[in-house]
Image (cartoon, rainbow, N blue to C red; front, side, top):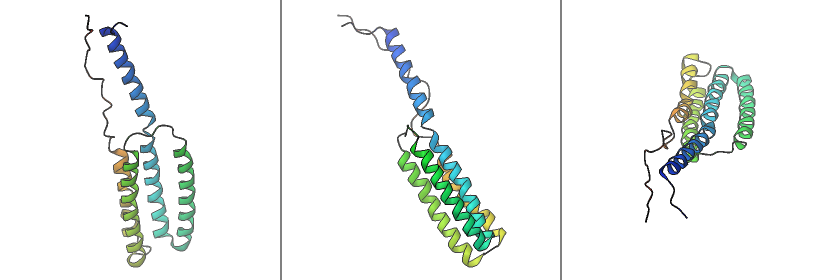
Length: 153
């Protein structure tokens, strides 16, 4: 079997880069997933904090619907990029800490006070937004400029 020519090697590298870029684009769904949850978090925190018991009922109903829809959508994504689990853990772990602290402090000290609940609602979304906007570790840049040379005995 003959060694591949430089042209064949360059073509194979270009094809690999094209496939990698297409895979990365399809794996970028986590960004949308996190941003939708960030927006949902803001809405739910505002409802809970500003509308009393009715807000809690409406907010939790909407939150459970959001979880159901996003879980269904996320389960249908076929590409999961390296680091997805870690990024999700950081995003939702950070969100959970801020969400819990916001509800605990807000319900006891600032019930119904927009001056607390509006900024607090925005702050709960920060971990989700940061992770969504933070680029994945892998590079989506151009293929390396390596050109193999054909070896002829």
